[in-house]
Amino acid sequence: MNGGKSNTSRAGKNPADLVLQNAAVYTVDPSRPWADSLAVKGKEIVYVGSNTGVGAYIGQGTEVIDLHGKMVLPGFVDSHAHVSLGVSLVPSVSVQLFNLPSLAAYQQALRDFAARRPDLEVIYGAGWTNSIFPPLGPRKEDLDAVVADRPVSMMSEDGHAVWVNSKALEAAGIGKGTPDPRGGVIERDPETGEPSGTLRETAMDSVHSILPPYTVEQMKEGIRAYAAMAAREGITTVHDPMLICPGDRESYLASGLARNSVEAFSQLEAHGELSLRVRGSLLTLPTRGPAQVSAFLSERAKHRGAQFQINSAKIFADGVIEGSTAYLFEPYAHMPEYRGKSLWEPDALKEICRVLDREKFQIHVHAIGDAAISMTLDAFEHARNANGPRDSRHLITHLQLLGPKDIPRFASLGVIGVPQPIWFLKGDYYYKLALPYLGRERADRQYPMKSFFEAGVRMAGASDFPVTLPCPPLLGIMTGVTRCEPGVADPGEVLWPEERASLKDMIACFTINGAYANFLERETGSLQVGKVADIVVIDGNLFEMPASEIGKTRVVLTLFEGREVYRDASLHGE
Image 1 (cartoon, helix red, strand yellow):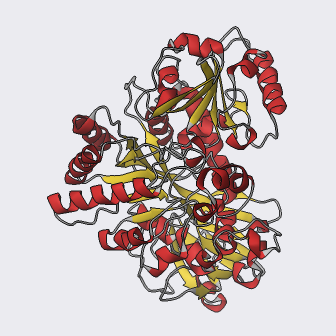
Image 2 (cartoon, helix red, strand yellow):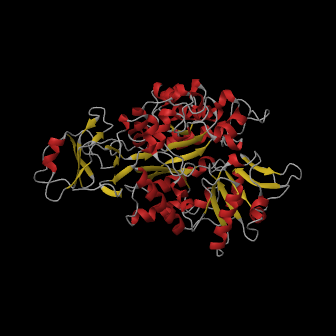
């Protein structure tokens, strides 16, 4: 497809299927940022221009929508969202803990679910937050009081810890004498030394490698639930960063629960059921090293469809601040002798990156702490030096703490940053976790953003769904500009105000930069003739409202490859 093709009045004989007119069309095309109308034929955009010119594309069968000034944008790209964990959105499959306010509410949700599903041999759930509990995390006794006859495993909202009952610990053989695995923490009662019920990072795998995973049908139901939500939010392309090879029985960082995800995506694509474009990364295990790459090559070759492809490999360099598992240069404020752990030895990380890069895999790395980010950049540099420079587009996601000397390295190495801008604010996380765990100086310098843009780094926006639920790019765009919660007037409540980004840059994050991060910039990411018709209509012009109001705007129409996947009842055609 040729995104640079010029507009031509050829539609008198071949009218468009859909025309959007009287709109504020923000194209994200530097050569023509704004237009008034847009026309779609089949899967493609065939016209972007004036209201006068679009008339040539209107025929008897053309649907014409007068948008009365509403804004048109390219379909949003979420460059890091665990679509596979959409299963956690399905109330018949998973206990819904997201956004509940207390331990009592968590217990009630579990009680209600267990009563509805006495047939399940294991109960899974997701969504509890670390800020409700002390650093030790939630306890098994609070689950035992509700369900004691079958294993219960509840994933935290950040995906880096599980809360389990005694039956789950028993099934996994975890007791007082069980040592912490490398890169993991079995939280323990400080008086008895017994496992207390919270398993962090790789310690989760001792449970999830034993318990049965979600079935293919359950995974498909979850992907459909995610896709419906994504359509309402204007998302047309997404990167799932945590797939595992079909048939692999090993679990890593709780991935075992979703080990049927690749098969689920494949079946949905084969039956024409995917209503968005999915790119995926295969999860790389530190225990296997370069030996696992041959299986990755085989799996990549199997999945080359237009809608579902596997082109990259995922590496976890460290954990998370809230679990005290992120890898830092300086110790944690609440643990003065401890600075977290890397999940890979530096030389092992360099070697796996070298081999993956040699085989032309894109590498997608989770790195939260400043030491983990620096170590990852070292590994990328090692791979480039060993294999020679290429258009690799390796990525680092999350980027919570960063040494300023490392930001220019992203640009020099061509590394893409994948932040979650919706996290760029003060709130419960800041006051209950970041501040006591990091101290004020580091807590106040979380999530640089503007500095990346100024250094020439491509930044691709993401939600880390289901950590963010729902996952609205518009809210991420707003928070990237304001760096505070909506309605906050106190300048002291802005997180690192010098790092506020421009609206133009934030829109690019979730459109053309996201497309670039997934090697899709020739197909999507901007509104140009010849590109696929991934289009979002929202009910207000973002450039004509206070930044603090952006999060209130609503998506009223989403098109994926010219096909309507969401329309608000308020939007009517002619």
